[in-house]
Image 1 (tube, rainbow, N blue to C red):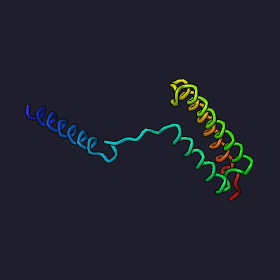
Image 2: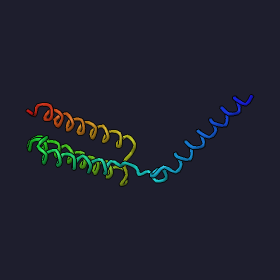
Image 3: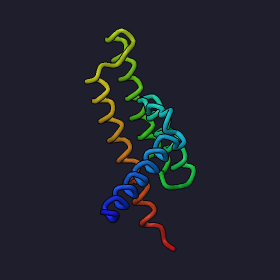
Length: 118
C-alpha cells in the first residue's frame, strides 16, 4: 500500500512540475502569428543573404526575387478583390507559391554547398 501511494505522489509531483514549467515558459504567453507578409520579407532576406554569401548566383537570386514580386502582386490583386483582406483559399494558394520559392532557394543553396571544393 505504501508503494502505491509513493508512486501516485511522485507521478503527481512530476505532472505538477511539468505543468508549471509549461505555463511559466518564456514566450508561452505571447505567440506571434507568422503572417504571409512576414514570410515574404523573410524569404527576401534569405535570398539577399544567399546571394551575398555566394550560395546563389545573381541570375538565381534575380529569378527568386521576380517570383517574390509576382507573389506580392498576387497578394495585392487578391486583397483588391476581397475588400482589403485575403480569403482562406487565397492564403492557401499564396502559401503554396511561397513553399515552392522556399524549396527552390534551399535546393540551389544546398547544391552550391555540396559542390564546393574543400
